[in-house]
Each structure stands twice: as C-alpha cells, then as structure tokens.
Amino acid sequence: MENPSIEKFREYLLGQDKSALTVKGYISDLVCFERWFEQTHGEAFTLQAVTPTDMQEYCQFMLVVECRKANTINRRQAALSALMKWAKESGQIEHDPTRNVHAIPKTNPGPRYLDKKEQSALQRAIEEDLRISRLRYPKRWVTRRRDASLLVFLLHTGLHLSEALALQLDDVQLADGKGQVLVRQGKVRTVPLNVQARRAMQEWLTVRPGNGSHVWVQVEGEPSDGLSNRSVERVLVRIGQDAGLEHLTPHILRHTFAKNLVDRGVGLEKVAALLGHSNLNTTQIYATTNQKDLEQAVDQMGQDEL
Image (tube, rainbow, N blue to C red; front, side):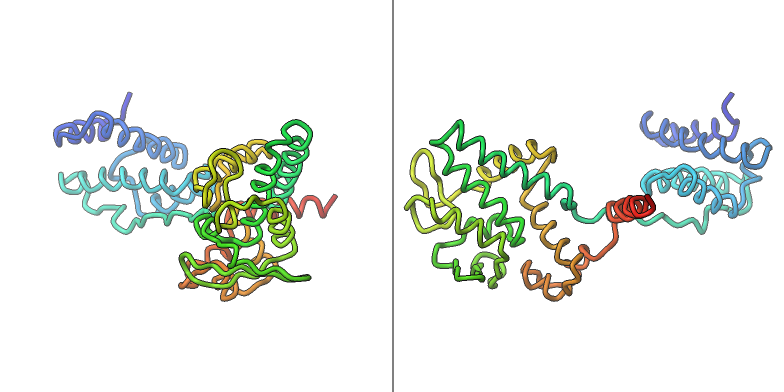
C-alpha cells in the first residue's frame, strides 16, 4: 500500500496538469527514498520525520553504495524537494529539510581517445588491410595505401580532418630525419611530423597519382582535387570495425594525439600550439583525470602486484 502522503502528493501533481509519465517518475523516485528511509531508521516514512541530515545521508547512499550517476541523484532530489515544498506550503511541515540541498555536479567524461591497446589494434588493422589488398585487390591497393597513410597521419599530427584534407603539396616539407606541414585552414600554424607521420606521408607520396594539388586525392573513379570528409569517415568506420573499435572518428584520433602528448609530459602550451587552440582551457581537458584513466591505473596496479 502506498504511503498516504505520497498518494496525496500524486493527486496534487495530477491537479497541476502534470503528464501521467511525469507523475509516475516523481512517485517512483519518492518510493526509492521511502524505502531507504524505512530501512535506515526502522520506522515508517512520514513527512515530519525527514531531516536535513537524512537528505545528506541519502545523497551519500546513492553516490557511494548505489553508485548512481549525477543525473539520477539530482532527479531524485528534485522529486523530494517538490514533495517537501508542497508539504510546507500545505501546512504539513514547518521547515523544508531539502532547502539547502544542492545539485550534484555532472562529471565530465573527458574526450574519447584510444588507449595503448586500442592504438595497437588500430595499427594492426591498418597493416592487415594493406596486406590483404595487395593479395586480393591489387588495383585498389593504392587507394588502401592512401587510406592507411591518412589514418596514421591524423593519429600522429592531431589535425582536424578538414585541415588535413586542405593540405597542398607545397605545404609539406620532408627531409632526412625531419618534416613538417603548414596548416593554412583554421588556425594557421606549422606542425612538425614525427617518424610515423613522415613515413606515412612518404609512402603515400611515392604512389600518389598526379591528380590536382591536394596531398590527399581520389584514386579510383573520376579524378578529383581532394577527398571529402565523408569518404574518410567511411574508411574510419571500416578500419575501426576491423580493429574492434566502434564509432571511430577523426576527432578520436585528434584526441588520442593530444592525450599521448600530455601523458608524455608535454606542456599544455605546446599541446595547444600543435592543436591550434587559442585558449588553454580547451586543452586542459586532456590533463584532467577521467574514468578511463582511473580504470587503467587500477588495472596497472593489479598487474604490478602479480
């Protein structure tokens, strides 16, 4: 049997023209609190018995014991606040125990990036795609070489996809043991190329057909002066699936590049310059510990103890 106070509150909500779904959600959240209150105190839930301390302890219970997300905690607290506000206004209680309740800040999950295992899986998938294309699809191999080089290039430069696809042949400088590209689209800057990015670029330029002035061009079909974002996104989906990586995007490769730099101790000012960020606050997200970092730290600790 439902608590009389909660039942009266349900009737009040319905009288306020709240939708049946909204009312159902409120009541469901209040029943959760009622259950916690009775299990904690060993007595029946009443409006008059609830204290500010109960609100604090219930919040801790949801956070620590139930491991609820901020959205769920805030929604349940909002339902309780609505109940107590109604109870005070209707003269059933003198003081609102939820008056000083504050919303739980939502945790920023941070940008999605590939960890070391995922990066290795991606590299293996790229290499396997090239191997198979040589054996089975020799006419398509140049296209697959371009795709492989472009993915490696994005992973090791952190460029936006649009920035990479806008590169002209004259923007690339390669020499023995060094190289760089001049990014003209977006934030104009010069980005140095590490050994992986240089190798990927050289392997592509060696077989690149003479179509147009862009670095990354069409190989099959009608000649084109550049690739479309959509074409590259389809490649990412295909290679990502081969690597066991769902929803692989150019942004994930960019985030991975930035995260790798931060993990190696590169200062945020330098990372911001490479990414083309004008505000360090934008770059700060890569230095913020997120859930994935915590999981990896715990896993590493377990391996160290074996």
